[in-house]
Image 1 (cartoon, rainbow, N blue to C red):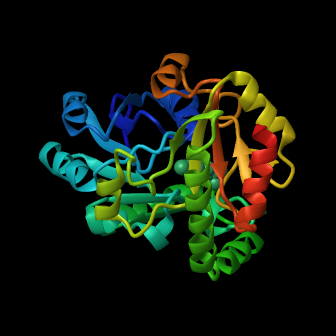
Image 2: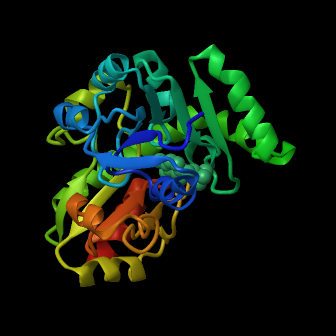
Length: 294
Ligand SMILES: *Cc1c(COP(=O)(O)O)cnc(C)c1O
């Protein structure tokens, strides 16, 4: 959809794999990318260039849970004739519908909440723009990125329980976020469902929930490493959104390829952990974190 020389302006706190795809693969084809804090509309507008063709947004962002106002991005997209692309993996269609807020293209990883069981890889792309459909279909058919029947089955089966999983995961995440805030060795908790989160109101205005992703910063790097080593019920692994709780060390895993200066600016340090909360008993999850932190 884009030509060499086109520029895409992205949220500065994107899923690391997106940054990897942009910087390692798409850049070779002549596309230009830059990253800005899209929760700040003025700052975002300043970064729009003559050759900017699209805004690429994640809200809440990964892993620092910044919230971008979709209606403000829609305004910018209209004014500068940009495509508005939203990665809606974190909240899923159950909690947030970016097309209703003006997005042209919405991306979901099916690997995460939609599949929901950490057992398949899939991805989805939705568009409100009928004229883009033939082009998109043509490309995925040509490059072969279509789903096999079995993966399709797993995702369809997963989606049947999306609502119950997400309600439970969100409730667990809320409980864990509140508990983490009280812990001496935890310095900062990033969860959109906490009313003191800077994006709390904007997120409420454009979604029906907060999701189940909780990031937190420990007092020292040693504490973070201890937690990763000591957790028993929670698994130290990448990925997110499934029924099992997974704890990630973004600096070494998901966000390893994000340039250091961006990571530092965002606070993705050696003390930063990201938890994808599953459907286990919340008291068991808290007990696991408690023993790992002590
Ligand atoms: C995992 C993830 C992706 C990529 O999904 P895959 O299915 O693993 O390719 C994209 N965006 C976000 C926000 C993700 O968490």
